[in-house]
Image 1 (cartoon, rainbow, N blue to C red):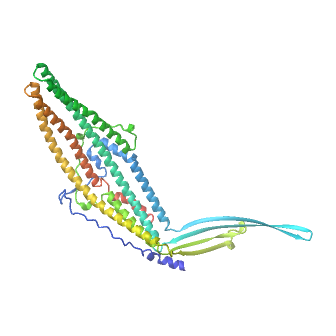
Image 2: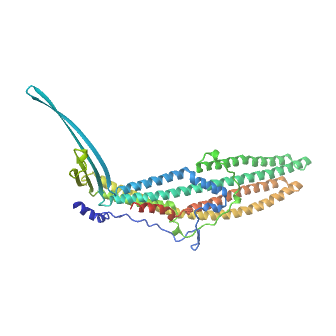
Image 3: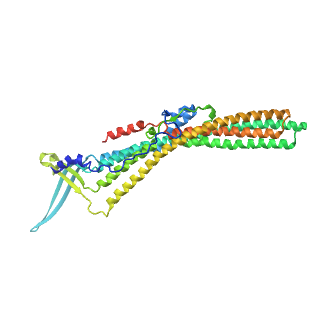
Length: 478
């Protein structure tokens, strides 16, 4: 009857240790500084990288999603967290075990009667089999809190996996864009080399005709040599970016066989963050920090429940007999039930220290959560501003290239016609070469800024997509 009364108060007792920690209340700005408050949101889709219009990039990202080592490790952590949740659920349910035994014993006794000695041997065999049930009663909600911690940990592992996947995807795209930009810069250097060599030949012809000096030829030859020297360095950086893709894809460098094209062939998809209130549901790192808060809060309740008695209910029933043939007879049946409680009386402050430790851990994670929220808003602000300024810088650089190209063309014609000195031609060429190389780097900066904005907005991650399997998992245990 005592066990029955304990079971009746179990639902009420489990609520005795409710959470007392403050709920996170992040400060959410009404709008971003970089955008108007009425700006509409253009959220990226699940396969947001396809908006760049690069089939090669699509293939690289698909390969990375299946072969990247960091993603594989994150998925393994998800499996570990699921196993921890299953273990936590097991503690809430009774455990049943079945055992059986056979015992045999023999004893001898020697007796002397008159002149005769006799030895008597006695053999005894017994058989038994019984199922045993053990159950720790969760009177104070300790086991339930432990399961909640494991459930939140399983969810956090999924958010972590999504954050890792987002980082890998953006890293692949960033590396590919850098390779394309280096290819563009190398192409610019080769074009500039051809133009400089053409003007060198014109100056050499003028020297032969007596209208140019050896100094003019040497100056142009120095420009040609300088442009030619930049090409190997650019090619080396290009090869390093291509081989870096191997690690991101989980392949050795020799297995990467791609040939970069040009950034000019790609498109820049539209993206706009909208209101800050929608961001926190999109960032996997923020969602992971929030799940870790749930873990920390549940661990506090586990530590507080340790102050209360631990009660275990156990029972066994079975059969025991001296003969195997009568083992399962009515007369061989036995049963017993036990209710055992234990309570720490003096622990030198260990339990209090454990509660304080878990509270400190909660405060630490709460600070990390608030930082993650502010970091998310900061990343979006920087991403929007960076893309805006990079777009404006590219527009101005294109105009600078147009003007420099016009000046270089005029100077080249005048040099060939013998109506201009070489110094002006050198200045025009140098300006054009620098502006063309700058344009390739500014275009890369614009792509990188857009990529950073995608990452700041959580990419194509959807909270419902991640939470759905975890919710089904929890429902199977709770």
